Length: 513
Image 1 (cartoon, one colour):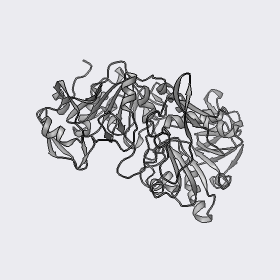
Image 2 (cartoon, one colour; image 1 turned 30 degrees about the vertical axis):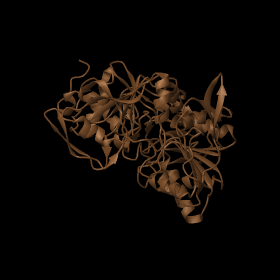
Image 3 (cartoon, helix red, strand yellow; image 1 turned 45 degrees about the vertical axis):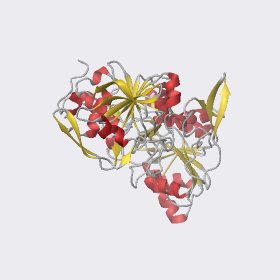
Image 4 (cartoon, one colour; image 1 turned 90 degrees about the vertical axis):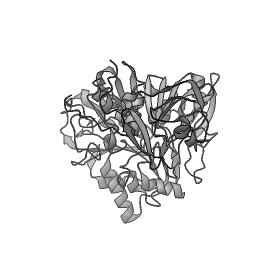
């Protein structure tokens, strides 16, 4: 191991290299100084260029920080990730066709890190069958410039599977908290472990280089072996960024790193609005003892709602980045958590999800069609991706897809436990055919998954004949407020009921009691 600067780190990158950057989302475990310097050096010297840039989770603040900084024509010829939505400047280049781009499920990319480390030819899984990543649909390609097939359909043991080919890895850039003089790395201040170990092994075993950004240095032999997550023998260069932040929003929280438990007191009630109503209705599908996943967006509020109701301890909430138990962070810090039971490596968390370990998940939707297919990643002409959505939804026993009934200007009010539509949204979300399939309703029905689609005014479920309307909000007229704003005609269940009026009142609902 050698000690250098971030400038030295970027100088190790050859033109045409495949560079994998660790970390997640809004700065969790991200070696941000490397991204800054890579963009700066390319701006000054026009190199390194023609890279393949890879990250398991989209890295960015939904504006200008993160992989948006790498939206420089010529810097990359190809980019691969699970969600480019929080990298809007790079997403714009992809939409223009300025570089090749693939969007693979987050858990698939995470598992590929480990498969590449082990010298396997790729990753075989059921995840992605019948969705847009299936080569019989888009094969994960995000624009017309992208033509190479990197996903195949194979048959093993009498079943269809998807085979995701191993990808090249010349350089892995990861982040830790402390490095000793031998390059051993510890993660005591990090909010997640992510894919760091698998990435380091993959690069090392394929003749590549491993670069680590750390907050501080320690003397040889001063780190407890039990705390070392990555041995120094795998690390080629270490540089220090003493100002590294846990996330883009939070400089440091001992609760995120698990060094302290956050006090239980002081949990305020969030105001009642349309998003909280939807999250509450989804929460009514949860049962004491469930092991759960909460998706990005509306579903993130469920952790706060459980705390408001005083029942957080009745559930085990998980986050795909590796947080098991406790209270997931939401908003700009989503991906972290506090008061958790364990902090797992991301590939292991996805092993648990892919194998059907979750009892329930609450995930967002952008479009739904009559067959119960969901699109979460391809809408409004913006390049996005599914993140962990496809992995999570493939084997989870009970699913709630959540979203407002319409989009673009929707306004509602609440009156004594009833819902009023003040202004209808401009865009319909229940459509004849989804733009691309993130979740396949027909396959889910065949597996016996229980699936509900929850909005502020209506609840649907996946039945034998596709989408079935099973609940409407009090104060809502089925014809005027529901069916008139759908491109499809769902089955109206004979047992159509009214949504619980507690959802539309500001006080706690008193669930699990």
